[in-house]
Amino acid sequence: MAEYHFERGFKGRIMRRAIVCIVALVFLLAASVSLAKDPARPAEPTSGYVPVHNFDPKRDATADIQAAMIEAQRTGKRIILDVGGDWCQYCHQMDQFFNENPTLRELRDNRFITVLIYYGTDNKNQHALSRYSKILGVPHFFVLEKDGTLLYSQHVLDLRSNGRYDPQKMKDFLVKWSPPNA
Image (cartoon, rainbow, N blue to C red; front, side, top):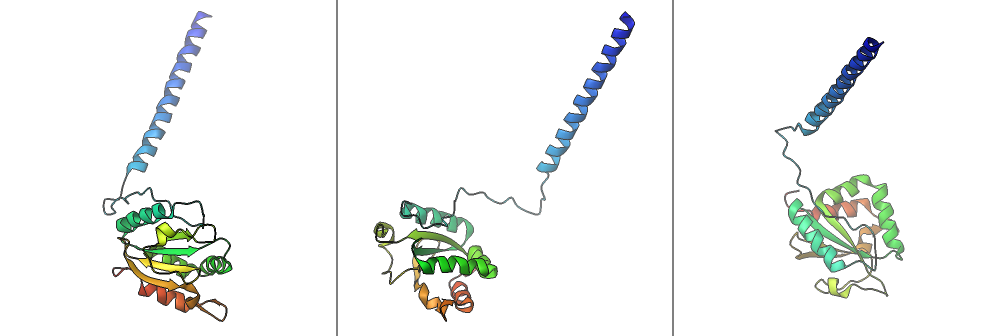
């Protein structure tokens, strides 16, 4: 009887050790695969930048513009300040326009950091927008160089035709104001 308990305990210990070794081997293989890098492809630098995709009257527009400038300098993109509000039907139409035109959305997102800046009767973000030209109406685009220098002021209604945003006009605008190396 004592022999039986010894044998069963011995085999159990061997099995447990084998299982532990197999589990450790699986973890080592998984770690080596995840650490393997393609030497020809440099690691992408990471950024703490969080895009501003909503018109929010409570946001600090000055800080949002500053963060966009840092991200633009890191990525080589220019900046579009999209001035408008959640109350603005043309702003909603523009969101829909870019959703329906993924090629233009990709063109915009690959070449620009787009920051939505709230503008309404309750908050005109005067402190953040005072350094730029007068806003004729919303939506309004300010195109900035990556250092924050104003390049162009565009009343976005000029990019419409027949009651809708015009894909060719929008493409021409985005291409014209893209960074030179794009």
